[in-house]
Amino acid sequence: MCCDLEHSETVEDYLKAIYHLDCRGEPTTTSEIARALDVSAPSVSTMMSRLADAGLAERSDDRQVRLTGHGMRHAREVVRRHRLVETFLAEVGVPWDEVHAEAEVLEHALSANLTDRIDDWLGRPERDPHGDPIPPRDGDYAEEWPAPLRAAPRGARFVVDRVSDRDSAALRYLGEMGIRPGTPLVVEDWDPFGGPLWVTVGGERVALGEQLTHLVRGVVAERNPRTGDHGEVST
Image (tube, rainbow, N blue to C red; front, side, top):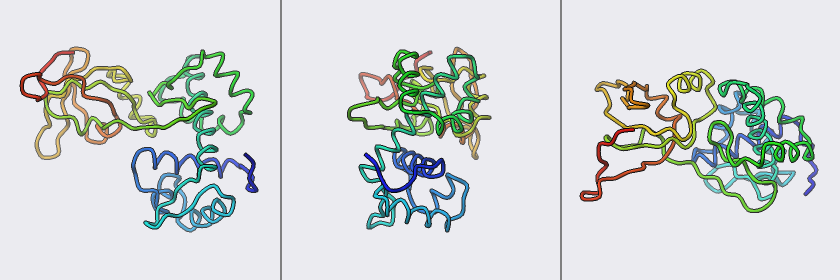
């Protein structure tokens, strides 16, 4: 579907930022969008008016920004290109902590035809290197974010599903410890007074600062069948 607003890199970045905030369950206010894009609040307000005039976004009664159905389709196209580029770059040997920054540039240059060719060449992958699902070229699609490691109870066996790609240094650190999508962890305990969370991964006990425990998301895989509590298990 066409719209009157030219889909510049800036427009696509705004659509993607709103999409990500909404999917993560975070506020989609002007201030949060400004923080996500590292721009001023007045700049966001100006762009919101343009997106609204083009039928791509609207403000709800609670002052949140919402993508329209039209805007959501465009946002998913950008997200699809970004995640396919990340997957392609990882396939050809670019480290997983570097593919996000490269994809931020390349996502705006791909045509729909080239995007589909990359998808076919990769074998139509369902997830990118960070575990983020890749929207299909056609059909319905709904994105969900599992709970962060921070919320897992002591003794839980936690399987990593997604790792946020917003911090390349954190990705590099987590990768060095072997914490990637599909990795099982055992949640040990928090050190007191704001200390780290201790987990067992690959037979080793490692400490994760609170910031890292918000970036790692996944599911609790096992519970104690008699009590309903999470039992101590090994990886």
